[in-house]
Length: 596
Image (tube, rainbow, N blue to C red; front, top):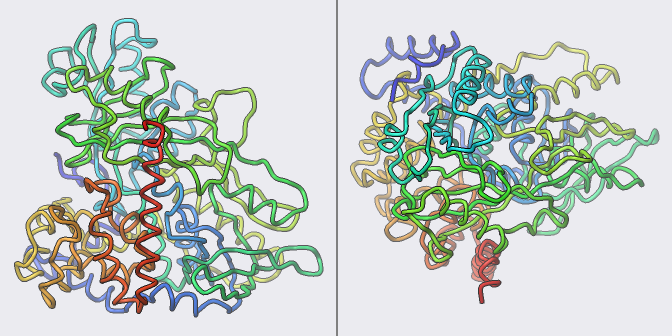
């Protein structure tokens, strides 16, 4: 893989960091000293964040998904006093249940949404720079068969337009593969009637950790981020405008009032619910659509690139995506009505994805028995009438209600940073118009300043050099597989996790037998990443929920006991956390009930 800096022009600020490090320390440890300086301050725990609530703030953000975290990062970096409240964990909803891609949206070209594509590819470049440990180039193979609705030369021309909209700052230039070349690149792919396939490049990511690091950066700049804090009702002033909210601690039942000059609704699929809380009129801004993915072992479905598929029945676009020792397939796109917290994959969803996989990979037939896990999320799309689910625009809108509530709706993961900046611009205008903000704010620089794990990351994007540093920092107590996982998950912050292992070698013990996640991650998640429940740990802070053969059920009691020791849980608390996690797993397996 070419070096990232050879592929994408670097902002001057990141070049300057690289020059500084070459002067400070030319060894393979470059970047770590600055990282240590930045990480000296201990992150408040979730409980301590709750205790901080109560002071007046400039901006109250309701919702701790990617948009809420991005808004908090932008606003706090500008110098605003910011508070985020999230009813569960950061990235609990859509932001940990996406296709885990940072992409320009090639299919939006067909819908002539050129502005959305341009915005997306521009943001893809920025995310590659500010989060290189989390956003990584991934090849996408677009097989074209006889009878396809678009010929191979038409699709290849589209590739040039796609790269042109990115000003040719793609991770790697696309190639048009002949049939024989496709067979070498993707041996498992159906070769019958295949005419060829363009191979182009977008990016993969860990959506939950992208959300988390955005929130942690906001905290580093003074924001309060309170998880498991549910907005119960708004506080209204004499003019009828919203002046904050009352929130409830989901663990203790205690409530607090947060007074805010501006309140922002960034609740994703819960947008209409929150809008209804602000008004006596029911709200129908959204048209939520459900996206389901299934996970299988890569030995059952081996792919080297993300393979673009059109479902044989309805021609909807979906992908088979390589994910280390696993492959995941998705996504569906169907209208959804009901509680966003109850969304899950049905048997129909799972069979739909299995059918598509077996059509494109006939020599690697998978069955229901091969499905390790599933996840289902809701796209909070803007309501449009007269179009199919897949045709609903992915554009976003910023709405301001009569009560002064700012709402961000629609959009996609890739463009979260730009959407967040637009929301903060709107909030700043409201603050100035009301006379509550007169001083000049700082520039946020969210497009050039790295996320926490990227501070000190190698300029040549050498993941292996970071892995080596992690191994050394652990005193040799970590396995190579665990060190690699930590480097790719935490970036340079992996050195802090490794230091825990060096101090207490027993923390190198696997969380789940046979897997690379280690107990040090639990300590780090509690003390530096706001983790407060077993579910937080096994779903959002790690990917054990998706990847372990039993989804971590067998080791959950031991993990909960260790976590409980750090958080002061009673035996009843530990039991309650295990039961809740078992419920989360059972919801992801609800489709199996229909098989009985």
